[in-house]
Length: 234
Image 1: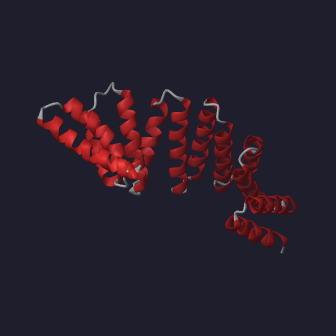
Image 2: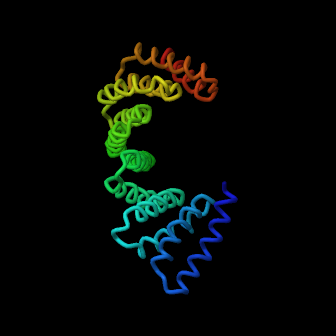
Image 3: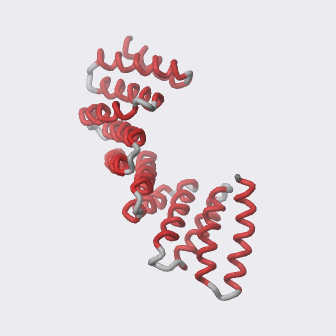
C-alpha cells in the first residue's frame, strides 16, 4: 500500500509540473489534492501540508468535495507535525462542511482528540458530545458509545464528575459489542467514583475492569486496573 502510494506520489509530482508548465492551474490544483493525500500515506506530512496549502489556494471556492478532501489531508498532516492548533482549526472548520454524518462525526472526533491532547478538557467534552451526536445520525451506536465514554472522562477532568457518571451510564448500553471500550469505561468510572469518595462503588468498577481486561488477554490494561484496585482496597 505504501509502495503504491509512493509510486502514485511520483506520478502526481510529474502531473503537477506538467499542468503548471501547460498553464492549466485548475488541473494542477486537482493533481495537488491527490498528491497531498499520497504524501500523507507515505509518511511525508510536511510535504502533504505544503501541497495541501497550495491546492487550497488554487481550488475553486465552490469545489466543496476537493476542498474538504485536501483540508482533511492538511489537518492530519498538521497533527503529525505537532501543529495542534492548526489541525484543530481545520478539523473544526470541516464539521459543518460535510454533508454525510459519518464524515462530520470523524471530523468532530478528530477535533475532540486534539482538544484532549491540549488538556482543554471542557472543550474536549463538548466536542466528544458533538461527535457522539453525528455518530448517532450516521447509525453507528458503538462509535457513539465510544464518544460518550470519552465525553464522560473529559467532564471528569474538567471537574464535573457527577455529570461524568451520568454520561458514562449513557455510554454503557451502547458498548455491549465493544468489550475493550466497556472495560475501559469501568476503569474510568472507578476513578470518577474514587474522586467522589464513593469507594465501595469504585472498588466494584475496578474489579469489573480487571476481570474484563483479563478476559480480553490485555495484560498491560489488566495490570493498570489491578494497581487501581489495590490502591482502593488499601
